[in-house]
Length: 184
Image (cartoon, rainbow, N blue to C red; front, side):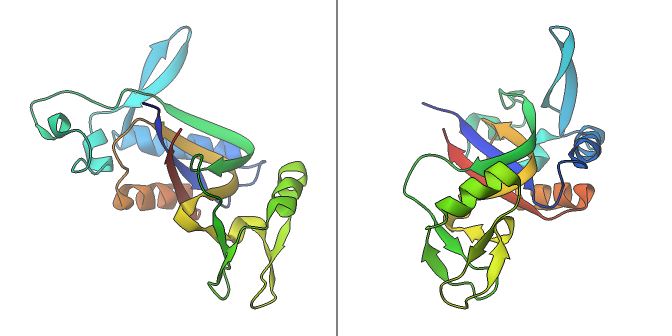
């Protein structure tokens, strides 16, 4: 079994502005009907809203969810993660880093930079091909394995998020996003 996790990561929100971006993103998701607030143990959790089906691609998911009359919805709440975080896809083979300048894919020898970024919030990675140094969060990774950021909207056990939905969420946040997916 396991949990199928998809996190829409805001690549540009700083630690200081994450709270405002959480408010903006959550308000957009709720206003659009993708999530709904539900009282829970003295607080509020956010579950799938009336338009959740428009945010996902049901084809590869459960055949029963494609039946319009069926009221089945994703079973887990939206979790918002703030603070310096290394978002990762799942366990598996080590990813390769993709240079944002030359698009060269090199084996991930980035662990010292990853450790430094986690400790300080800033680190550069050096491309072995074009020789340019670029901030670690600007690098891409094979299979979208990593994202380095201070804000992520985590959808656990939802069908695959549709690209039009994740793009629209990025516009609502006003920042670049990356979607990190995997089974944990």
